Length: 186
Image (tube, rainbow, N blue to C red):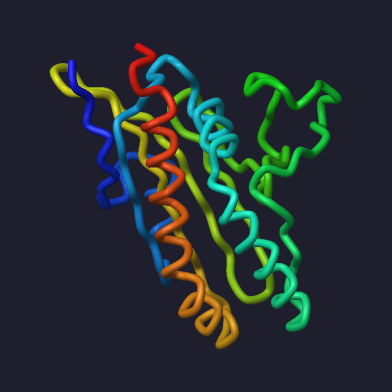
């Protein structure tokens, strides 16, 4: 059986928690690919995505963090950063995480088996990222990563003008790595 590993741009999935945040959003996008592990939870899939994030994204985030500190914005760290969990459990398993825990650069805001919504707020903008899992009879299961941004000021608009092309490429690369990571592992 041939699996399509194409990453495509799609609409933010309706009926999801992230979709409900679209009102007055200044930026949003969503990308999808085939889900290589449909039985895994949304958070476990996000952790799999982070584990396979290309090294060049770490380098871009390091440059971003140095530059934004000069403008008084947060150094958010790296996507793969590991933080202690509020429960005290080791952050080695997706089942250990709860709403309010940090995963990489984001705080978990919503957590279910089929959707995890994470966010990062700063004085220039608020960003939310969601990973949702979708399955329909007769079609391959999919993963969608959606991003919704609410901008607060001119600095936020300037920031998004610079970051958007990088953001889009990073999300596409992350999903491509995920899709290819389990090629043949069915």
